[in-house]
Image (cartoon, rainbow over all chains, first blue to last red; front, top):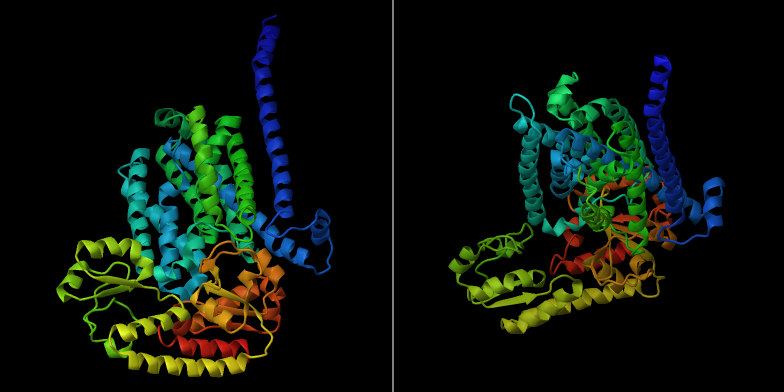
Length: 346
Length: 239
């Protein structure tokens, strides 16, 4: 009797769990399908118009044509890059929001973007001959900035508030450096505007080859962070009681986040907002369990950036806008809408 | 007599001794004051920022447009009589006209190529339009700028255009303008051109008509040596 009662009780408790799991899987599947749809739309539309038939034959036949050249050498690599970068930035933001326990955390907070920007702009403006080194140098610059922020924030342990304050200070410092350079070399500034505003235009397969291996490495690292991220959300005391080394976890998560943002920024320049809004949207949709929230963030980040990049090349065609501007213009109001709805705050 | 000039690496030899008063867009007002000039000549691009400052400090200021080839000529025509040097101005203008006539002869009757002018570095660049310094010269030489084959609604000097449209318009000549060491820049562009399969499909690349323009003549308007630039451009556009 008792045994049976216990079993029924267990079933009763587990039933809603299954329903929740089913709902979560449903959301993931739906988002995955949306991802496929968005990818198709992105291949279909650009600044030149082709018929669907031309696009299909461009994808699947070997004959040389303008459509094939454009689809295979422009739209497809851009689609893949936007997808990778969007996922990287969204995951980066999600991890940092757990580290900081602060919904306003985004990859830029660690100094990674401004550090990368300062070094990249220095090279492009002052030592243009070494422009080939921009991705590597931007990554090194971003890493150094992150180290600086964490060094400044470290005081027998790491406190999120100190990271945020150190991040703001370092960002101001490095941002000032970038502004100074663009003032001193104002005649050359046209050459770096696209980079500063984040652009996937003009990126090609070799950028995909450059970014993909590091991204896979970063994504695997992010998956291994899921448990710590979940625990950190509970607050220091609870996390410690559950056996988490809080300081170590904060540093590791931060560096995985900075790595993902750093490799992305170094290839496509500065793109904001993905890392800030996507984790919010994911949390609203699927809850704050990182097992689900992280993959959802990755997919939504990809989708958002692919849409933004498609818009960047179609809205004002033939003029090509930096995708970072689209993100800011669309992302800002969307984020405010979420805030007004009240659901975005944890 | 010039009593001061903006700090620039490109000052002609004869005025190198003149004291420098800071960047063109933000001259040092104290130094400017100390020189006590009768007239301050500044770039029209910086007029919105500088005019109120000059007015406040009681400088008589004149803002000139020195962006393009044609504006250099207009400025010589204006400053000659204004400074009582009409004769010298006419000498300069006659020399320019004589050289232009030679250039016109070279260009006459030649089919006009479709050109794309890349401005920037291999990592991040925009396209120069007909309203830019180099773009205006290309137009004077009868070339068709790729930006005119698309309906670009803006009168701007450089514009980020979609590579899709660039491919469709298929430029016959690509001109590259960059700052920095010419050989190094050329090497970097070469790497971008070989790594990115897009470029290889353009007829300019297939026919080897990708030309790096010398920085000192083309990066921005050099003043009077702009005729050298025009001659150079005529030679490379119509070999």
